[in-house]
Image (tube, rainbow, N blue to C red; front, side, top):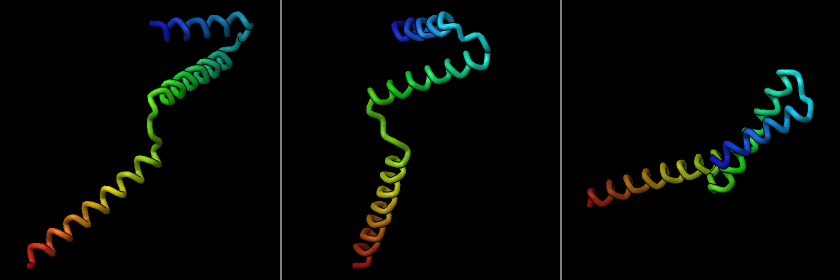
Amino acid sequence: MNNFKRIVSDFVNIIQKGILTGKDIKDEIITLLKFRGESIAQQLNLSTKEELDLVNKKIENLSKEIKSLKASLRKR
């Protein structure tokens, strides 16, 4: 609820500052929402897509290595 009040407060501030065109209001709202989303993501300490892709690649490589080791153990 507190976040909603902040967003409404930001929106009221935009209107009070005299931004009159719809496009400007839309752009400002999008910017505010992106900023809020980024701050929430930063607080949650989320990983980036690149980090996730790197971890997935490592998991794939380790899975292949495990399969090859299991195959070599079966041959013995």
